[in-house]
Length: 460
Image (cartoon, rainbow, N blue to C red; front, top):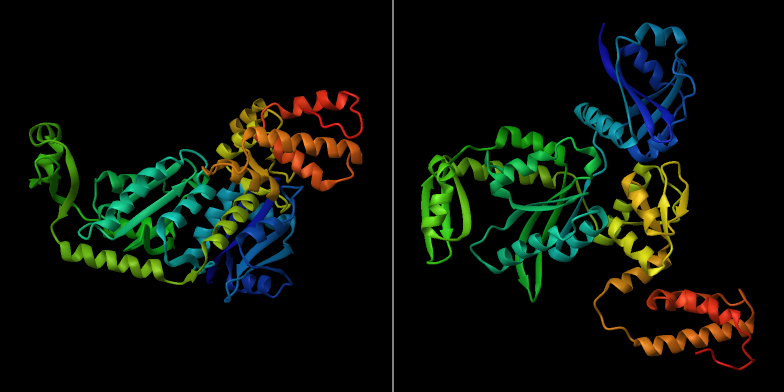
């Protein structure tokens, strides 16, 4: 009897799931398909719709069945407790967070030929501006890594002889940028680093292929294509080449020399001591033609079923997916990275600690922030507060100096006291923004409100 794999998903808690892979007969799967179900447009929305299981031996099961149009169907059936008992040792079962189980289910469905929503692509864009926007929304720590990426891409765009194709990665703890060719060569630091994050679901790895067109004024122009990182690793497993030699360009004096790969690896320090600082290193392989063909095949894989997008829409999707994967689905908060959250709290802006059960609480102090960071919580801000933070982060000279800002603050306070507390939302907004620019303003306001100012007086 022909048997096929089918997945069943159960929700055990706010962010805890059980995924089962069963092998059922063709007739049993057809019976499940004919059962009434609920359709979803993707994994994230489907996980949100899975019910909470109260009884581990409950015979009710939520079966996951993809359709031919890219959607997912959940068909709930009562298989009976006897079915659960009979199969409990024969099926593959795993438990974990929403993110972990999404990764497992995604991989399993892809092996069955199911195609998820296409990757994003950005054609002829300002490469540095686009990558920085992605980094700011996906990389929580070590954002200064991007400075090295920026320098590498800028120098390559200005140099006609430099590589044009790069692989760029944004992850929770920083970024990486490598010439694509070096990632195809075994044992290079680039190859080792690119493979290092395989299976790291919690690091929010986003990988991109970048092709530079050149400079347009001061802008680096090119194409950016989002890639399926895990699929790319699988491709590299059979399309990587062994290094045979190393071509090294030295800075002073200008000189290019070639070394045997083993000789260079074993005597690197003595070579550098003899010839001086290195400007560029290029690893050589036995069959350069085959390496070029493999990279072209990878490009075809990258461009397969991509969706042209604007960068603003893409980063909005990043934030939405990150919040929903985490469990916060209210839609009232703008995702805020840890470094921005810390600055917001210092400035007196409203920054919230988001919880996996969908609740939130105001971060009132650095102690609140540190505790939330320790427990790997996410942070969020209202859109208006995030705009104030964005202004505070820019390097532009403020329109008003400190003395003028104090004057504006004083006038707004006085007007607010004359109109009555809470009667003017505009005045409240002006006072709040001024307090963010003026350290100690809130304490000064309390002193002023304690005094009996005469009508018409302006508090100084």
